[in-house]
Each structure stands twice: as C-alpha cells, then as structure tokens.
Length: 102
Image (cartoon, rainbow, N blue to C red; front, side, top):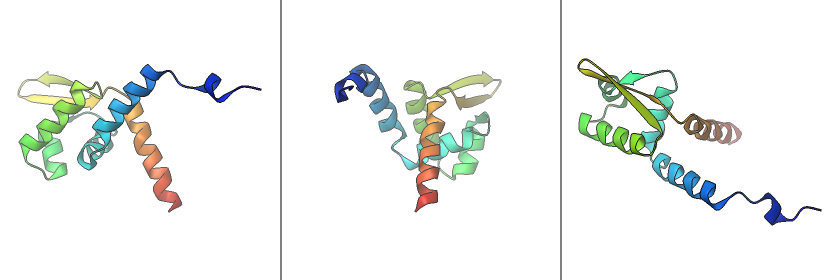
C-alpha cells in the first residue's frame, strides 16, 4: 500500500506553482488571462477591455511576463501579449467549474 509521501509532489514544483498562484491571485490578472485566452492582444486592446489606466495594465503585464506567464512581441508601435504558460488558463477552468457548482 503506497504511503502519502510516495505520492508527494517535489518541493521545487510546489514552490514554482505557489509563485504562479501568487501572481494570478489578483482579479485583474485573472481577467487578463481570460482575455488573452482568446488570442494575442495589444496593450491598447487590454486597456480598452479592462477599463483601467494604461500604467496599471502595463504593471500587471510586466509582473505576469516576469514570472513567465505571458510572452510579448513588438510590431511597430504595438506590443502584443499572449499566454506563455498554458496552465494559467487551467486556473481559470478551475474557477469556472467551482462557480458552476455554487
């Protein structure tokens, strides 16, 4: 019979996961993931959809990019953001499933 420890996740995996969850533990960042799940968007698109100041959106994007959740690509004057860490969308899926049960 396996023990609880034999199924334990490695501590480094748990630490990385906790760091990602801390970044995503903000409603606007979750909304950004939700918006980007439909495909890449520019900062201007996100500002318009989130109805937040550009500097606030940029700050959220920078935090998420620094933790590897987002990737960006500059095209002329626009910077396009997209999901780089698909597990971020898994968190949204968990939230949706929980909301459906309540």
